[in-house]
Amino acid sequence: MGHHSCCNKQKVKKGLWSPEEDDKLIKYISANGHGSWSSVPRLAGLQRCGKSCRLRWINYLRPDLKRGSFSSQEEALVIELHRILGNRWSRIAKHLPGRTDNEVKNLWNTSIKKKLLSGTDGAVPALGTFPVIDQYNPSTGSDEAGFLPLNDPNPNLILKSQQYQLQYFTPPITMLRDLDHHGEQNNNFRPSTWVHFPTLIPYSSDSCSSITWSLGYDHAQPHDDSVVLIDPNQEEDHQNFSLRSAPAPHDDRIGLIINNPSITDQPPDNNATILAPEMPELYEIINCGIRVGSKSGCTSFTRN
DNA sequence: AAAGAGAGCAACCGCCCGGGT
DNA sequence: CACCCGGGCGGTTGCTCTCTT
Image (cartoon, rainbow, N blue to C red; front, side, top):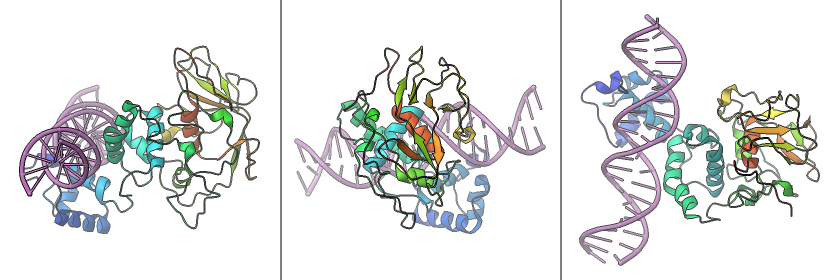
């Protein structure tokens, strides 16, 4: 139960990895790939369990890992994603290039949890409070990039009940750039297509257990074709994020209803719309950012 | 300077799931 | 259909480092 054949062998070393072991593992995987993890220890000459090798590689030795402490932006993103996804650390980590589920988990358990429990507002800045950049420059590929330009942020996105972490939401450019539809890194992404969202207004459902927000105009009809729905319980890979029919308001899924979003190749018009590159994760994050309220009462947005 | 407390983090454990037989 | 095996994930542990007294 839970034991793997490769781990039952005697002479399997446990505990911290030595530099020599790391070196062996790096050399082997660099040359051959990991293949079957259970065979890696034998082929690499390690007295380790295959699972241990896999963990060591994924959490520490992988060349694409970003070492060092989390930035404030990353912390805020973790908080926001945790609100939708819960303790699904691997799913959260997919939105943080170079970070592992273990790192995210540790961050949450050691740092963020305490900050939130102690109620130290401002300890983790709101996503929308970070500096913005003019444009993402693909040639630089800087991970230090801030957020999409938002010179005139839509006041409708200011959350009264959750100002401690989210005043108005703009997606981290790194998330938009680095992930393709499968959550994999995609450095070729360029926001050539834009989705123009109308003004955000709340969509009240019969039961506040399912809180849905409409972006503009009237409430979406239950089977309006121009609706984006995201099910946080569904595997991301199976969410095509295409416009599709919405279920009835009593559906348990969290819904982001977008009425008639227009998809164009025109650059953003910050005065009128909320703009975002056409990326699945963006929809998910936006969905997260604007899902507010509780069973006892749906919180409304406030205006300046 | 030493000891204790607390924080941070790497790694293990146990479970679940999917594929193969 | 049942079983086995490997991969993956979340929870937990325990070691190490840093800070405080």
